Image (cartoon, rainbow, N blue to C red; front, side):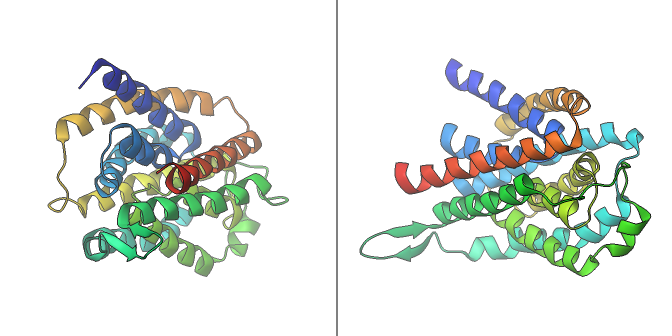
Length: 274
């Protein structure tokens, strides 16, 4: 590895960890493009690496949040169960049978990797808009969901959203935070910081479940992946510290614009620069 690549490895790993600690998601939004565009790892393998890095980083962030009392366990479990099942099935059974070339025409062709990145970007744009616009009175005054909001929860919608998150997470190797957090804020109506903490629990588990589905089917460079993950953990601590200093509403907006910019970048890269 050259000096420039090593510097890029350190800086991008710290940035990914920082993003996970600060926003409770978005690590995979950075990790997949970083692995694909900077380190020239093919998209399927890049999604596997992303799942591992995001999973390990999210576990550390979750451990730091345990004593804060902001994790919504009941809502998290209801949302997470369908996510876990769908992710494992997608990684283990669906991805291996998707052809390398999905469409071949006279004007253009669409490969599996390109399709995954485009899908990733489109979903990111939709999720970002929902966070930027928000809804009136989405967040109760307290850190936890109020008793009234708990009775108003639509668990069926949460379950459907969980299936959708599992499908996207399994296909594109995203931890799912950029979808989980909007679902928890808008559907479950819990505060941004509580949504972040709950999301991290779900992300840590579903990322590692998704990665386990790749073991034996994807060739993994453990020295590279281990080093990258270790450096990302340092960024998590910095992100968690900054998170504690920012208000819920500002965090929601920051998260939304971050996802929007990354979605636009991937769309431009895949459509115009390839």
